[in-house]
Structure formats: structure tokens, C-alpha cells
Length: 433
Image (cartoon, rainbow, N blue to C red):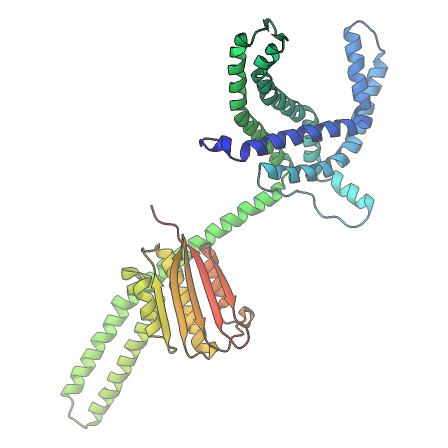
């Protein structure tokens, strides 16, 4: 409503259609509810007659009130259940779909009736039904009549007076087209504000319908799921922070100590007599120390490579491909640096994918592509292996999908028997700032 395009959009028509259908539904329901509400209508008539001087016995008034309330409470909730279903469907004109709160029941009419009368959703629907045939119907009638109908009538007043008829709007009368200029202006104003009034009224009606007809248990569950997702994301962030701390400690602590130890062993080997047992022992220890340093470097690199933090995916993915036992062709098309959690997740996906290819696929080559599709990072690996990858066989695909789901992404897998296997990860990465 704050935009200039609102009057030209579909929302004014959808709002007017929602209000018009509210009038139709309210009128039909008022007619269908006459057998239930007849005692209350008779009570209202009796009260009006008493106001004009006609007397009615008290017992009659009490009987009508008791009978009316009994019929309304006995049959009203049963009418409200299908009406609520209709209203949830009709609400889609101006509001996203909502779900009802009725719990499933077993077979049998009595079981269904007992369940409906003992659940809060039925009584909320009953309250909505009462408001629909009274307040909502009246307000919808007023908006549809006072604004578009009255506005169109005021715009037509010059033509009406030109035909020789007098337009009377108490206490004024207009019998000439020139005198109706204020009415034309008023009609134009009414028509201009009609879309906004209709939208506000329809929105208020939608809020009332959602309050009374939506399954609030589902809303609570949805809120809990959102909180669980956020909590899982926080745990992943904490895990990533801890991984980086371990990587830093290993790189700056244990790895440097091993390098110093290897240098000292190398110096001691130089001082040992050539060909002696000491020289051979030191050579063996020196070789083992180098192997340990190499293994430690692989571990450190697998935890969180420094190149990923310094230069991002365009530099980290080719380096990861160079260490793969299967030849990998890499294509990275990333025009900007991505958020740290996106890069970390994408690197994890690439590393797991290439690891799975090396262990299970029997492939001769792999293609690794990374690109941006709007605000989504698309990371794809395609191998020419035997195919038949199944997440239920414990190849790490389920954990990979869970890792991507934490950041709001998804993993798609195509792996027919005989290959090729295509794994595609889509990770949201809105631009920062």
C-alpha cells in the first residue's frame, strides 16, 4: 500500500473480491442459520415490542433465550467446522494458506462429533462464525456500498440531473449538472480511496481469520523448528571456530616443534660417522619425522586450509583438486568474495565429494564447478565413475546434506547405475552490506 503501483496491482481487486465473497457467505449463512437462531430472533422481536409498550410474560422471554442458546451451542459448532474449512480456502485471496487445528479421528459419527466438541479449534471456528454473520458481514457491506457504489453514483449525478431528475442528499438538493461539481469531486475521492479502504478491511478480516482458524500448535511447532535450526547453526559456527583454533594450534605449535626436531635429527645425522649404525638409525628416525610432518600437514589442511581464509574458494578449490588421486578439472566463476560460513561449507562439500569419488566411484576424471546463480552458490561435481551412489549406504552423503541444510541450502544427487554421478549443492549467499 505504500507504493505508487498499489492501485494498479491485483491487490485492490483481490481485496474487493474477498469482501464481496464475505458478504455472499455471510448472507447465505444467515439464511441457513435461521432454524437455529429463530428463538433468539423471536426474543429480539419481543424486546422491541416491549420497548413500544406491548407486554410479554417473563417466562416466555426466558424460554426463548434458553432455547436459542441451547440450539446455537448444540448445532453451531457443527456448522462452524465446514465453514472454517471454506474460510481457510477463501483466505488465499489475500493471505498465504493456513492449516486447521482439528485433530484426526477414528471412524464413526459419534467419535467425530465427540472429537469436534472437545477441541479448542472447533470453538474458535464457532466464534469466527458468529463474527462472520454479524460484524464482518456488516463491515463488508458498508465498505462495498459506501465507497465504490456511492462513489459511482456521485460521479453519475451530472448525467442524472441532465435527464431532468433531482439528486437529493439530505439536506441538499441538486437539479442542474453544474451544481453537482462538488458531488463529482467527492465521488472521485471515494473511488480513489476505495482500494486502500478495501485492502485495510480485507487485511483486518484476514488477521481475524488467522487468529481464530489457524492451527496454533503448528505455529508453535514451526517456531520451535526455527529455533532448532538457529541453534544448530550456532553449534556449527562454534564447531568451525574450534576447528580453526585446533588448526592454528597444530600449525603454530606441534608442527613447528616437529620441524625443529627433524632439523636437529638431520644435524645429528651429519655428525654421525658415515655408514655407522648410528647414522642409519638417525636416517630412519629422520625419515619417520618427515612422514609425520607430512601427515600432520594433511591433517591441518583438512581441518581448515589457510588458503581458504586468505584467498577464498578460487584459490582453495584448485589446491584441493591437486591433492586428489583422481584427475580433477576445476572451473571457478565467483565475481566476489563469499561469506566465511558459505566458503567453509562449500569447501567441505567439495572435499567430501572428491573423497567419495576417490573411494567409491572408480572414476577416471572429475569436473568440479563453482559459480554464482543470483544469490546462490552452486557447487557441482561430476564424475565418470560407476554411479549408483546411495545415501543409505553410508557414503557420507547424508552428513553432507545435513551440513548444507544448516546454512539453508540443499543437495541434489543424480547417480544412475553405470554413471555418471552428479552432485549439486546450492548454498544461499546474499551479498553482505
